[in-house]
Length: 327
Image 1 (spheres, rainbow, N blue to C red):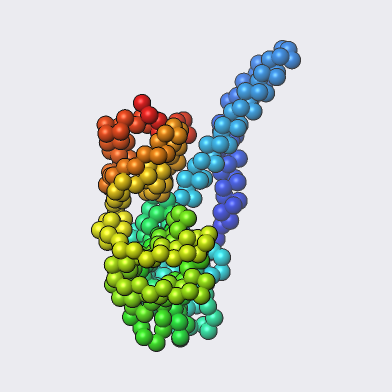
Image 2 (image 1 turned 60 degrees about the vertical axis):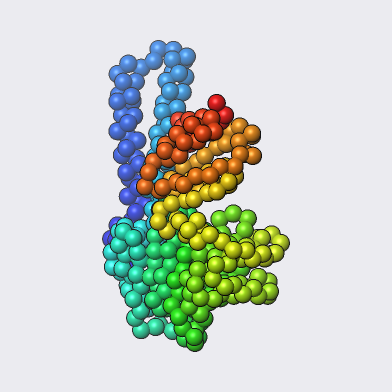
C-alpha cells in the first residue's frame, strides 16, 4: 500500500478556506462595527455587497481548486488518487511505480494472486506515457485514461482505455494483448497501433504487426496501413487506408487537419490547450479548414491564421473561454 500523509487534506483545505475568507472580509466587518449603518436601506445595501463579495470569492476558490485538479493522476487499486508530479517512487503489493515528467514505469514484484487495477488519467492540456510490467509502452493523448493491472495474468494481458493512445505492445505468443475501448476490443500479439475514441467513432490505426478488432462478436483483421472505424451507436465497421504522418502527428505535439470541419479542429484544440471554444456564428459550423497546430506554440498563432485566411474573429470572454465569429 502507498504511504499516506499524516494530515487530513479535506481538513487542511477547509481551514485554509475559512482563514482566507476571514482575511478578505475582516476589514469590512471592522468598518461596520466602527460605523454602524443608520437606516434599513443602508443595512440592506451592506448585506447585499457582502453577499456579492462572498459569491465572487467562493467562485474564485472553486476555479482555483479546479485548476489544481487538472493534473495527471494515478488512482491505485485501493482508491487513492495521487498526482503524478508528487508520486516519485511508490509501491503496491504487486509492483513498484516510478514516475517522472514524461512517463510512469511499472516494475513487477511477486504477484499477490489477485488483480490490482490502477487508472492513469491524463487531463486536457497534457500528454503522458506508461511503461507496463510486460514492457509494453502506452502513450496517452490529452483527455485520455488507461486502466491497467499492476501485473498481467499468466494467460492474457488486458487494459481499458478512453480518449486516444498509441500502443507498442510487446510480442508474446502465449499471452495476447487486449485493449477494451467502448464497444470495440482490439486483440494483438505484438504490434504498434493507435486507438482514438474521442468522438462518435472508435478508430484503430495499425502501424505494424497485426490486430483483430472485435465488435459484438464480429472479428475484423487489420494489416499495416489500414484503419478500422467503428460507429459507436450502430457498431458498423469500415476499413480504409490512413495517413500515418497525420494520425500519429500528436506524438510529436502536432495536430494536422486537411479540409476538416472547424468544429472537429476546435474539439482537438480544447483538449490540446485545455480551454472552452464556442462557435457562436452558425455559418462557421459548415466551414472546412486545413491547418497544422503545434502544441508548443500559443493558440494565438492558429487564431491569427484563421483571421487572415477566413476572416474569422476571435475573442476571450471574462471566464477565459474563446468565442469565434465571422468579422
